[in-house]
Image: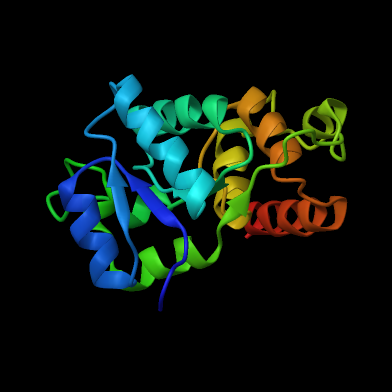
Length: 185
């Protein structure tokens, strides 16, 4: 499978894993301390071919994603479920530990940011659904993030990503219904 956009990853091992899964060019950030020079290269790639930000499902990966999003508010994002990114010894998290199928699925489920999103899902909807407060809020956000291919996030990040990716009310409701049904089982 050939990918037109350049995939932004954190390091060389991520590049190797992505290239095993898809035919794509990558650009490495070399960790969470993204230099201005690296940001300029990412911006040039975005202007010429488009970029897909595909970082590890951990705090440094989220930080890198946020830095790039602030610079390029209309880039694309691929999210890998954390459970698919855990090393065999269970001590490390990263794209390089994911299977070819999981990487392909994440890249095929890419989400595109909208520069000036309209509010579709209100903050009150998140409160009502028990996604912001309550003993199950964190688990529900995690399950919802997995269903919507947006990764794990806190309440504010969930609200922002729902708008940023223009998740429809139907898509949100179907995913939430699945999460709540799974809870009951």
